[in-house]
Image 1: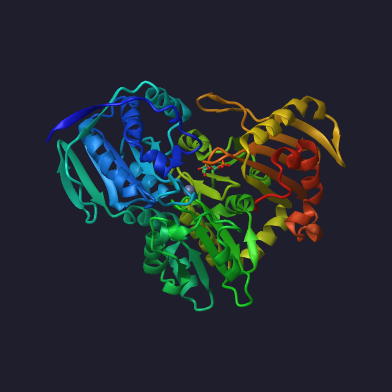
Image 2: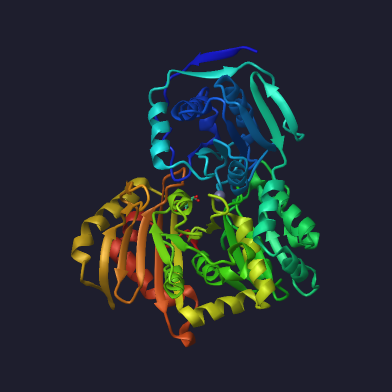
Length: 544
Ligand code: G6P
Ligand code: ZN
């Protein structure tokens, strides 16, 4: 088998963002584009020759094509062995699980998460390290630097590899093992959660569940775990066949994009529990009967109740949340006497804390929750955690949340997104707000007294790396906050995110609609940042 060295020239736009390199499929389809990036990964990682890598993705359009190219390049670059999911499928948390379980050197995950898929839509690729988590910035920067000076890539000449059946084959000097994409992950879930109790709940005849895989990767995982291992009736699952274009949908589990599921959970004869996951299986949305659990509350509730679940029965070491996530988890941590870390947006910032054993659970407002069982956020894990809690407490979702608020107080919370706005306007907003921060210090905004106003800077407590410019926070003396940041995951224009939070200790005042409870802060956010002026938008495009 001949190995070729193909001359190439750098592309200027291969800097990985929050979650790897994400671009339109058309961009990836340019001659040498994917190859340049993959070669940059191989060339940036010392000691990769002879090692085992994991490869798989969310099944979106271009997944299979990209995997064939990656396999041929891996063989030409001296990689020892590749574990690849059958049909090229591996959810992001399952990829993380496989990297860890088989002590692999790392893995390539092909996904653009919840972004729409298809020939005109998005594709993405990211590198995860041996701990199973997204590569830290030091590595992604090295990959980017290499992509700016690349002159050649290596690839073997070979026909396509059959990925349809589990088994081992060889490509040049490299072994390829096609693995069942679900089994290792399902086994891990079975170790963490009380499957007997969940099985009793699901089989009791008076508990009705709906899980929406949104035509994306979690379908086969939900079928194996919820139906085959836990006995839920098949009608509990929706849209479980992964499609290359996610059936034209936008598989982002929130109140806007998971509308069909939300409508079912808000109908008169609504099921007891509803949940959805995103394109690559790492996000989750949790619903009760006519009840929505914010991801921030979900993290706080899982933290408060962790000991009820076998995998966390010994208690948790600490908890971490991203900066814009509400401070509900902080209150639980304080009560439990454990630490709560505040990190920048992006799951990769949890990796060091998890590896060092500083935290056991972590979560983000962006519908991500997870633990030290893998190094990615994990959609089905969160669903099983909730089912486990419902099974052992006998409470409903709404009751569990109300109990929680009564004990810890409620952090009213909402995120307002202005999607696809003009980048110049969005940057101008952030810049002028940044300039106003010194004036805001110690002053007032409406009835609120400003406690601090800054641009969030994070120093990693483990490796002491520093990340600047992670979003503008204006905190008030009563614990309320507003946060402004620009999305790091969009592929078109800019997306402004405004995060609003207000604390309410009085149980009699904890049952308002979040938008009503936050109305004053919403008005003040526009006033202080000039949202309408800079974006030209009268209202957010998505409210969660
Ligand atoms: C991805 C990351 C998350 C992060 C989110 C933020 O989903 O995996 O860790 O919270 O992006 O996206 P944004 O668009 O707000 O930058
Ligand atoms: Zn995702």
